[in-house]
Image (tube, rainbow, N blue to C red; front, side):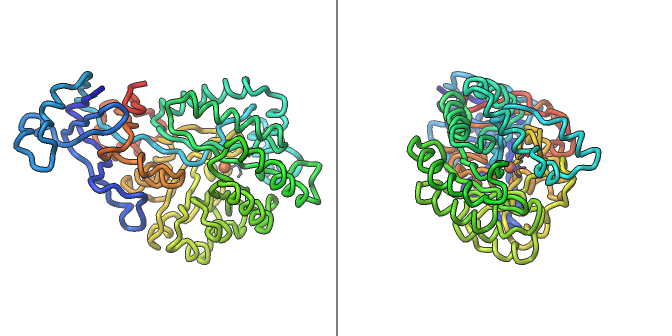
Length: 426
Ligand code: NIG
Ligand code: FE
């Protein structure tokens, strides 16, 4: 089936030679085509270019000789006059499967308690774990499925989802099976991440290495035997898991075919960045606390530094030094961290705005940070994250807007009018 989107005011973030990620100065570069068309065949991007090609297609070098025929033979033609087309956001860090919201802790925080203080008294992640234990797999699935639907309508086309609100073997498996069902039933590209080492259950306080043993000896083998996780994650931070715990868990996960991703340096300079790079993590995430050594360590690494602006906003944390990282030649990705405790927002359009407003990224850098670089951080940038021939046709059409800079500028407004996933309007 062929779909032709024509009269696009501006087709944004096109790539003629697709890259897997964008680093340093290149983050400021973003190509667009004004007055453009986009041709989709089945679930993939078949061609794009200026509208003038539609009328003079036979004269164009480098395009299919049958382009005119292909365009004229489209099954569906959409007129996007006044509207822009963008590749879908990739959200490479979420905790979207959870049982309860936590707005009462939000009020505790307003009254002065810190995130760590709430966690110490058994709130936070343990609060969510309690509610997860009480919920059935079907209940969790229904809630998550509805959240995923909302995420999709806001322009996200690929998402990574973590477990980590289980903290027992049974509950962690339950969460991962929910993610597997989401993968099976949703058109979105979904990656699953086993985050058994998300919090330390009360009964393991003071001897957390025993919980680490449980993660390594019981949970990881079972998760692997059911093929439930693409990634393995650890909350490596002050008051949570140590570098030594992290090394042990990553080694076990890697042995079972899972690629590391790390929660690092949210509360303190935790050693999480270094341990992530050492074990070839695909990304290290949060990074509110970054010294020069952390930036140095990421230079030349395959690991994507990923900032979570929604979490820093919600917890009033210091801001990750995104500008300094980009100026040092590093790539930077930005994801939502969508979760009930530290970032209860599903909205990547808002992350795009925060990238510019709070972290001083230019709009071009912000688009790269929330699409191609987040696609890299979840291992899908070969097929998603930009508009390129052969890539998956996950994109959105905006409402009529004036410029692409309007997207981050008009924070809080939903600028997405229609969404296409795998070439189909949803
Ligand atoms: O990424 N930092 C650790 N984990 C989550 C928060 C989890 C929670 O509080 O529920 C995060 O911010
Ligand atoms: Fe997180």
